[in-house]
Length: 313
Image (cartoon, rainbow, N blue to C red; front, side, top):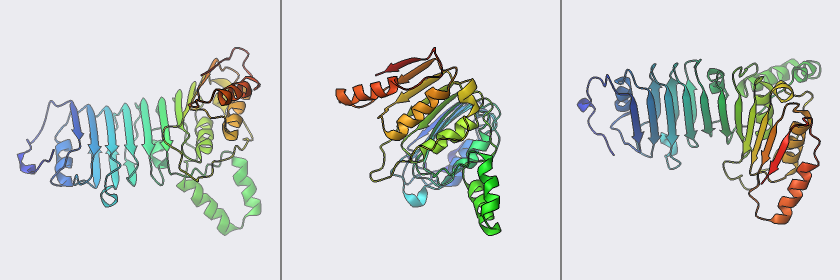
């Protein structure tokens, strides 16, 4: 549908609670911004952008908004696919899927946020996480970001002795541009990590380190792995994230393939998760011999929790 006349908009939609804009085309960016600004009590907003919709930067600045879903279609032209500006301090649910945009600027802290799904292809998505640190359930698929997460402070301290001052500042700048050092997800109890990105293991360890109350972990490959990309190798962390030791109760691994890095990551969790109650692991493989080998490998892993029940499908 194409909207052509901005002057036809009412001055306000004082009672509108739910709004869905799917594959719409607008006469200008000002039109949709005016439309959203005219909804003072909006609770639920869903937007799916398409190619040629006339919007470069979509500004969602609605203090009353509780649920926000943003989709940018893969066929959106590159020169039209810049991003979003979000100012929604009352948000409870935030779901964004964007593999062709550039950025999403979150201008306000969201103290009541419950659910967040970030399925994005941005160069530096990390700044968003600071505004979303109160989240209780988090799903992450960051398909092109390179996580340069320095998990443990001693790494930086050692650098003081081996780097000259110029390189030290370069290291500091790199850290600041990547995963935010010092962020803590105080309320996070459920985490889902997608494994399609080559650096997913680093991302997983970063978030585990910063989630002291995490109870449930789900690992899944949402998207196809890009052909020819070298997968990251498991690097044993120097210390175990606190949540693995004290609060993690369930592990669900979907599309487990038994690769070396997957086996090492599973072994690390089993070996250290003292309160793990249930581990459910499934594979997309149709080869019964391969699945049997994966099951054997998992069954032989040492489990810290004597009450952990392992299910393999």
